[in-house]
Structure formats: structure tokens, C-alpha cells
Length: 165
Image (cartoon, rainbow, N blue to C red):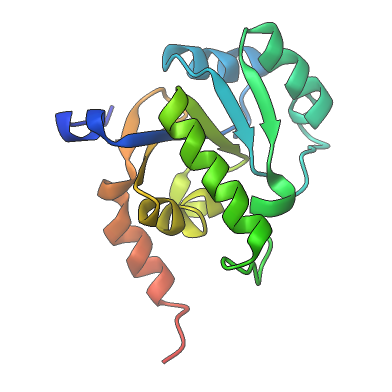
């Protein structure tokens, strides 16, 4: 298990991230509760799953709220659509809301991919959030935590493969 956390991060605005992967709903909620998450922000563009219907928006909302957490859906503005305009007012506004949530309590950005390197949580949202002074801590499927700062070199190397010269 890899756990990466340092005291400097305790004074930084912090958001957790999590991917629902193929977990059953009990395991998923348990991962959130183990980190004392109070608010779950779903950033999936399309908050539904044919294969895992318990992650459809309405059912997920019910499970999250039954566990005493708040469920929010920001997928319209922060979803992983290609060609996302990071300077768009709606995108910037939702980033500001995420920043506020990081300051006011324990919140987690949620998407489908377990591995944060394969998800827009890191590829699209990590950079703009870091610019807002928000650090990301990824909750992995086995319950371990890893700071986005540790993943950044690998993510940046992956993204550079697609950069235009």
C-alpha cells in the first residue's frame, strides 16, 4: 500500500479524488467514509453506468446521502469532454466552488476510473485546481492514498506525448 501525505499538505486546501471503478456500492461508500468525506462531487459528464447501475446518478445520490454525505453533480461543467475550454466562465465558476469545498470540509471529486492517471480528474482538473492552491489526494481502490504531486511527473510525461510541437 502506498500512502503519501505530509504535514505541509495539512495546511493546504485539499480535495480528495476517487474513481468508482467496478466496486459494489458498499465498498465505494466505505472508501469514502474511511477518509471522513463529507461531500462527493461527481464530475462524470454522463453520470450513469449500464454495467454498474448502482453508480447511476439517482441511485448513487441515495446511497451517498443515506451514508450521511452530500452528493453534488458538476459533470456538465467539469466532465471529461474533449476540447474542454478551461477559460469558460462555467468551468471557472465550478473550479471556484471546488476550491471553496476544499476549504470548508472534506470533499472528494468522483469519476469512474480507479487509476487517477487514466482519468480527467488529473488530466483536466489537477492543473487548474493547483493554480487555485488546491492539492489533490487520490483515494485508490485498495484504500491507499497518494498525493497528486507524486503522480504529476508521470502524468506530465503521458500528456507530453500528445502535445503539439
